[in-house]
Image (cartoon, rainbow, N blue to C red; front, side, top):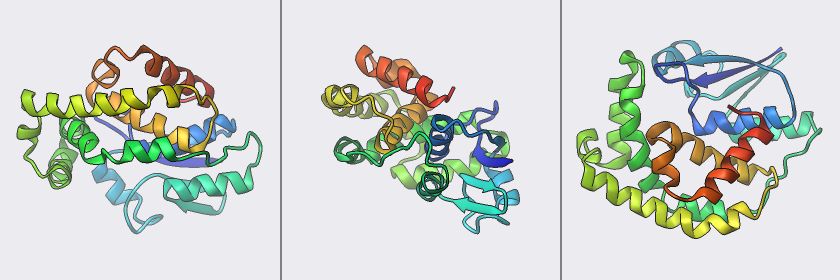
Length: 212
């Protein structure tokens, strides 16, 4: 039986972009697996024996242990070629990644309160290191709205190219993963605004790869 170690929020929701990529590939290939959802403290305690970096995702498939979402994708493609997931064109994904700091500034500060109590101090430090601001500063309405505006401007400009490509490629899985993570962090209304075309593409994509 395959086992996938995942990162969870306070309420047990698996929200990690990196874990999402693996879940999507597994789902599209219709490969069954058992989920082990853990908070950061639990990951540091339980995952180190599999991954010295103490990070998820970690996939255990029989006697094979694979860490890192990209490496897991490559492993699954090689060993389970049914319903192949091509890498795909990364042009749009690369343009989204150019605003990584904006996305982190929107998502990470809003994640702190959603985590288990024992994980909040650790993640607060990570969020502040990544954004260069105190969490409270990032959450100020003017700062948040400025970053949200930059996000919307970028994603709206890319929407036509995104929605015109309905293939399940690893590049599109990455794009959907960004949307999945941000939706958890700040909610669908802030992520999509009035961009119904992108929202519809995202919701349909989740159905195809069998991710809730």
